[in-house]
Image (cartoon, rainbow, N blue to C red; front, side, top):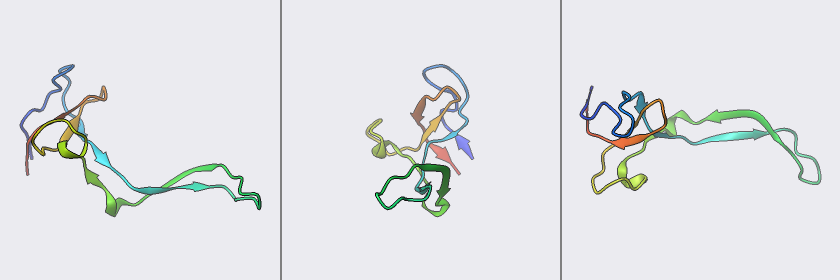
Length: 82
């Protein structure tokens, strides 16, 4: 695979991955009769629902390129050749 813009335009760090959108279920502890509960601290990720975020998903520009990110949390659109 080849990333066309492999370094962050904001800080110059190398890309560490793509920005992903995940679905899942954050579990509750036991729900009381009055409906009170808390999160248990466990989240089941539905890996089959994982998708790479593209520009049109997170308005970053006119194209629909995938977004990559650096270790500092910046993201930018770039073409990726597979």
